[in-house]
Image 1: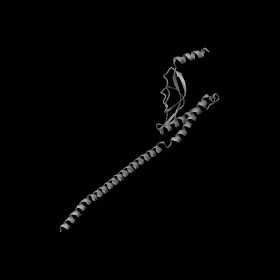
Image 2: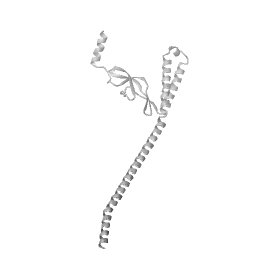
Image 3: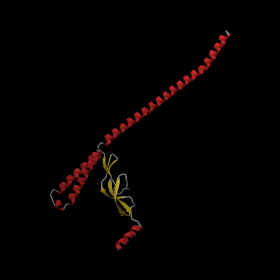
Image 4: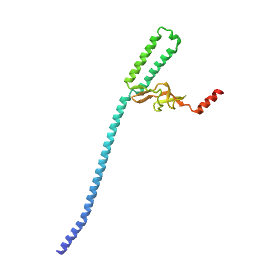
Length: 196
């Protein structure tokens, strides 16, 4: 009996010794399951965030397409206003046409069409860039020449070609002449050039 007791004691000791191993295994399994759960949860959250970003981006693109879809059409239509203004200027400078009985009527018709185009442009978000006597802004102006002046440098003194914005987005920059302050050295050079 003592042998049986000692045998039973050994078995229970072995069981006790082996039980922590099974606890370690179950703990490891629990840790693995928890890690996999966290990893899966992280992937799910990332996928949801990516989906939300994609939804916002596509919504923004749809809104931009709706809002700025006519951008290229508007850019092409600017040529109409330019041509109407050129036609009016051309008729005003032609002496033979000034003698015609229809001269005033024709200029009035060009002016009406031009004003209608400007009105339609305004209704659709196309606006002329007002630039004379304003500070030069390279975002909406393009300097074509410098004009010596007593004004401070960088003031727009001449508009060569009208610029336009389409819903606050640049459609065409205004081509301008910008002031360049006359310095004493420039004045001296001008005097020397005039003497020679």
